[in-house]
Image 1 (cartoon, one colour):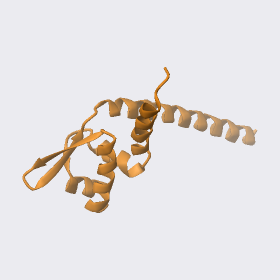
Image 2 (cartoon, helix red, strand yellow):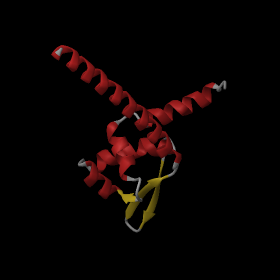
Image 3 (cartoon, rainbow, N blue to C red):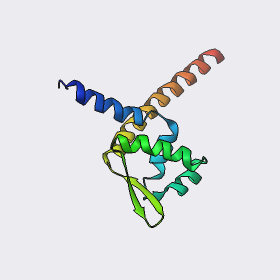
Length: 113
């Protein structure tokens, strides 16, 4: 499939949003349910300002949504397909780690022989 430049830029924005460990932690904590910014800051063990900065990047990419409830802002997943993508990547990383472990084990066994 040949994508126009605008579409490629949009895909790059999406992947850039996923390139930070803190944003991945935030997404992981949203798997179960919506959370307030304060809850996310507690889970991520950082300031609300820092969490808000990361949420802005995720929102700009269309990954999370915000809902105001009284004086609180609740964050939810706007695109549930994000977890399909995360699962694919996690499976790939797990396969790589298994290969690395098997290689490590083979080297260790060879050194013993």
